[in-house]
Length: 322
Image (tube, rainbow, N blue to C red; front, side, top):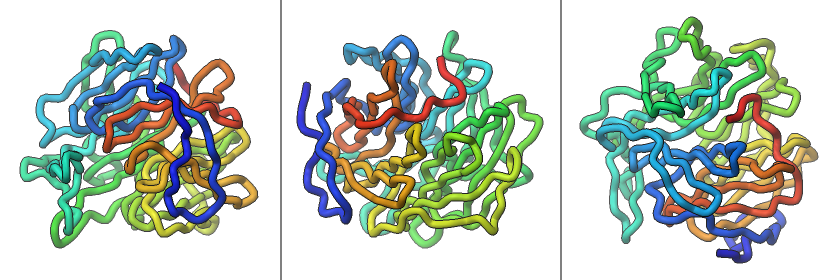
């Protein structure tokens, strides 16, 4: 199905009108897309809770599934240096039906922690067997509340955000973690963020990008070494009135952030901000695919869509692929 990618969102900044097609629909709150070499897309269905492979012709195949949506929530996904998929498991949500749309937060309070919630974790998924093993439930002595999104660096380590859990009258204080896939090292280099969500690295691997959901801010830090940032370098690249979700980085350093209710927020290296509309209110994530990395795969959670956009510039190739 083809269509015009822009719908008026009322967001500040210029608007880009891009064409898209619907690759798959009927997904249960999709996030974390990863384009694979065979043309398929791996993604998580948070309300599944499962990891799904969507073929190029839109067929959905379950790769792995967790037992209960109240105690598990695959939220972000990336391919690691060993070829396995690593999953940010938020520990489960209490889901609410709002006019036919399932949301992971209660209308009015924003509370989303399930009464059966136990812990968040980083899980390893063997893509050949479908076996899921828990790698971390704590890092550097700090419990994982609700891991959300992750990215691997050239050293083979993962940077990931912990979005935390929100309850009716309080929420977790959270931050950004760094960990190795062999379970031997983990730390929390950034603390005190408000709902950190999307995370990415600059093309040279020297800058870490993090999007905060409730503030609509995109932050950047210079990386000193694996697992360490220069806190004096913290800077805000975008400060909006919206709510940010996950992000992806283009080959030229442009950062594209899924902006809930507004589509995709495109933050150029020179500071120019523009928006690409998405056919639905909850754009949650974006990744790059195709031979030239000029296909932007976008997940829209309210309508359960996987979309493919013709993107004007190539995306950044990730460190590891499958």
